[in-house]
Image (cartoon, rainbow over the protein chains, first blue to last red):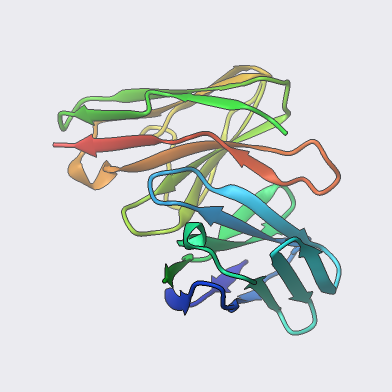
Length: 108
Length: 115
């Protein structure tokens, strides 16, 4: 099965960088997703890693190490609108198992 | 990407009643997923709905409590039956993406409050 852990909450300053870590134990794993969810809204897709390494997409980057069961989401040049929950999700077949989510608060 | 319309967006219901949530997708998809997100929590998969067969439920969820219909490749319903305050939650439908990366797309969710 899948057991996915991420910190509950993080605070950072506008313009700074924040790294959200995600560790997992899984069988049948075939990918690791990151989603952003603003309060009261549905999650939106940010990134998907299936191979080891770093994937960069604008201000957001995601890293995966399958041997270590570890991923992180890196948010650069933080903006106030980045205040949201960030969900790590492991994929096994067509099913996603979500971590508890990390609430990121960006302060001016 | 897929556009998912989910309704109602919110409802307040009396305990003991049932609510049916509808999910409409703008393209044909093989699998649709129903999630629950309790207040302050992350998403938990309730069941996977396939067209033409019974839904597959995750541990802790049963068909009598959460019956699901999947009459065609663009539509599904989830019913929350015999509701209690513990069922107060956000319910989201999701479809897998059609790209090779298979990202999931979510409806806007149904915010259910049971009083």
